[in-house]
Image (cartoon, rainbow, N blue to C red; front, top):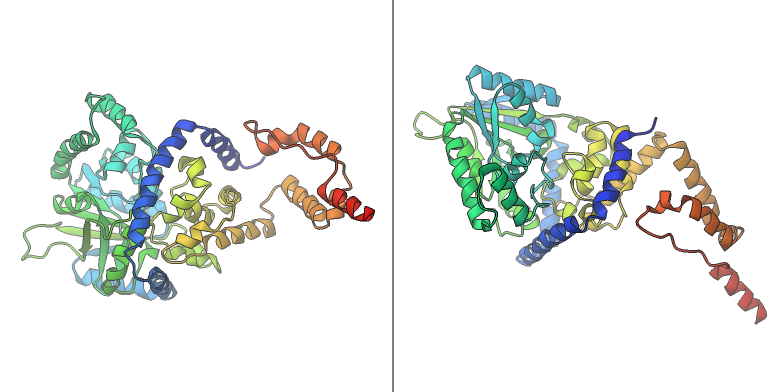
Length: 461
């Protein structure tokens, strides 16, 4: 039957790659990112050593992951919190809904969290008549638009100020001429009461801190702090790979994440949550629940070489330098995690057969590996996935035999000359659109190859 996910990927990729308006918006936003990050990296005395150290710490955490997770559970429970384990997305959703129903919660506020996007918690809460409001400005914008995050760090990167002004006009009847500052004020006004009314706040976790039983959250808008301060219930949903050995490691990771994610010296708000408020504390949640999510991560963990992808700190740097991502956009991937890191992990988090095609959307330029703050060899892992696809017979009969034919022909230049340029042109005139797309013209082969002309010239000498 073929792979409908793969077919849709190529249809969407071809469409968006030739959308000049989309390209202009992305190039503008990416340009601002690159300028900020290049300046941010210049703050380092020795960036290479910082990357080496960060990679070493994350690999150490990965090697002792089961022990660190158990230590976290022990210490967080001692702090008065509750730790739950979720093998699948359905398990996590059921646990969250049970908590909310037990405490009679009808509305929640959410800070930015790709893990909650992964399990699609908003849709499931809505089905259970529980209002879920995104409070990060970018997430709020895409939620209003009925869309998913476009980028793991910048959810509304694909929208211009004009797009957002029109969206707010449609939803709130505001002027289409509002400035960026005025649009932000509108969002702030709409969200303030939501924080006050919410019965629970849901956050993700940038890092899990086993030695103190805490989770660390980094943000720029203060919405995560408000999501955990006003409501009586704080629910954390965190992937099990988010562990770092100690809270002391935040001295490296908080600025390292900020520099690679946005170019800032450090993100504006950085918080550690170790449990619910104590009797001596006036503010904070009365209950705190941390749900440790597997959802395919142990499958990644068991894959030799691929397991290092779990050291990712979700800075988005690899997406921002990827020539494929910046041309086909975030939605084409049809996954929670896009770009190079999503290409590597999604087939192992979900169904390998359905998503391994993402690995064909890579030029293997290696820029993602060059910029990764924890030195994940992303382009090598993409090649590893391709090898797994071939060895597991996950490629089509046509593709496999076409590549075998190409390998045979290209391995000896004389074989390439066995077919004349005219015959090659005739073949590609029939199949060129399928291979090259209908937006470009396939180049013409010369009647005689360079090799044959070179040999003929040298014979004359």
